[in-house]
Length: 238
Ligand SMILES: NC(=O)c1ccc[n+]([C@@H]2O[C@H](COP(=O)([O-])OP(=O)(O)OC[C@H]3O[C@@H](n4cnc5c(N)ncnc54)[C@H](O)[C@@H]3O)[C@@H](O)[C@H]2O)c1
Image (cartoon, rainbow, N blue to C red; front, side, top):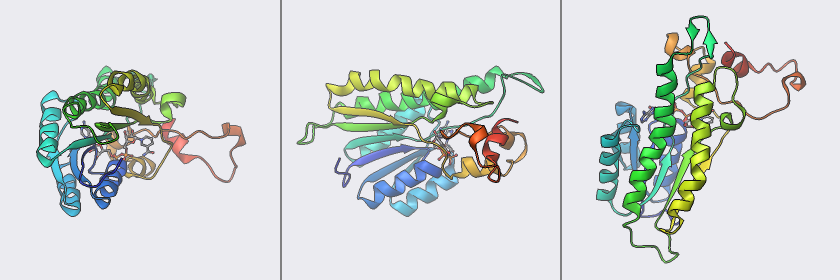
């Protein structure tokens, strides 16, 4: 897609992958709407890249509608990149007993329901676009994780949420193909973001310790080099 002059929503755009995506789109002439819970950071990034910030919980219908309205006010909404996400690390049964259901539910709400909420609302707006000469009306990219396929200890909620993102990708793509809207999902391994560094540093208090890492595919643990301990994996197994 020719990015220049088009409008893109980036959820989770205040940090990490979303921030990088927002900067890339702006550097290529796109108009970016950052949708994130982090107000100060989101506003700062938006200002730097000449974009717009909208405070948004992706799992809220009202917030999602406000983001799409802000985007269409900027011009032709042609893209949504779903990067907002949380990664709690909790075992099915841990020291304190059974996995809190509220943590599981929240993870599904943000990572899975939140992604779908933004997709459905952005797609509704894109369906009204005049198609490009190529017939294209828009593109949507969501972020799953290698944990969708190979979740580690403590990742029941995270892996389930990302597995859901993977699972809905094809039916959504089929739903929207006739409208000229593409839908796809990436499933990355580990990369360096605040989510990763907070976890690797042991985090701040309980909230920090609850952050899990998506695990990269790799050789069986026994084949890892003895001098290069996979401390990320050890953290996730706490
Ligand atoms: N970092 C990794 O190693 C890794 C690997 C695989 C997949 N991922 C996925 O990539 C995506 C981006 O992660 P990141 O590493 O950049 O993390 P990050 O913590 O740097 O960024 C996530 C952003 O999402 C925002 N957010 C959280 N809950 C939200 C909500 N309810 N509504 C709106 N915004 C919300 C946060 O405020 C934050 O700005 C996530 O979906 C994550 O699961 C990350």
